[in-house]
View (cartoon, rainbow, N blue to C red):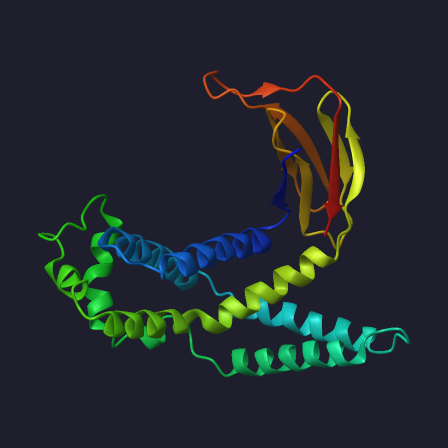
Length: 250
């Protein structure tokens, strides 16, 4: 039986983290380009990520989360059965990342001298405006040697390296806070009460039984409703059967 995990954030901060994680995954895939259209997808993803990071002041929230991780690691350090070596490596990584974040410049500052990026960015906000007659300088760049292109891409992506590391570590700690438990949704519906520390609801369920979960709620309570996947129908169709799934509150 095929299964999948759905993740639903309970606040705006985690919602932003998950969106950034998705964009970083797309960017890392897109940088392994070989065709012109793949490079266009790379720039589209890159500028979307840059715009999101420029609009948000994430450093304060991320530093608070990193400091919370450091505090937790120091508490775990007192546990007699903890793997001291593994914990030491994790703590060292957290401390280095915190120091680097505090000393880093605002995201996008390092791109101010990248005139090529600045010259093509605006066109990517216009649907279909990336043809060779729209952006001849882009199509000139696409014909450069692979070493030049690879060096440019690595330099541009390095602008996001610290924030990428911080998002990875923060979401890793967050997901590890919750353990999956078996739950039954009577008539496809389940309601739960969120703990003060819950930021993320994770649902593990079958992806082959023609249904999917939706979630509504906030940091106090939430409701899960399973819907039947009927792409030709207008609107959503509620499941009326009992659904077995696994739930993790993180």
